[in-house]
Image (cartoon, rainbow, N blue to C red; front, side, top):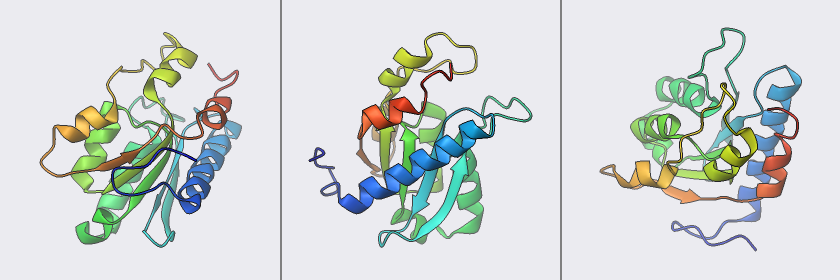
Length: 165
């Protein structure tokens, strides 16, 4: 059983939605992009949006799946709806993405591969200069709480990156 989340237990539904984020990451890779993806869902599991990594075609280093998803969500949904939503991410949101999640107002994050695990896989690859800054540190610096569960299903999440870097 996964470890408990500060906002409650990690459920089978959470794990299913996290695996859906993995499927989005696989789809991104199949299309030649970096293997990252996320899903934004309401508490009842209704999916609000999915987002693949947006690095290509412009080689936008800020085109992380979570950042692009937050830009979309911030204009599509009212803040009160986002407060109750969970972002399921194939990998731990970086500092930039965590900032976007905080500013848009999403209330909970569930992620697969931790930032340190990702760094161990990508090394010094120029397309992924991973920061060693956990998303919890970014969220803890804010004025409102963001619940975090992860890393979860790390072996499955790491497998998405096999041979990609």
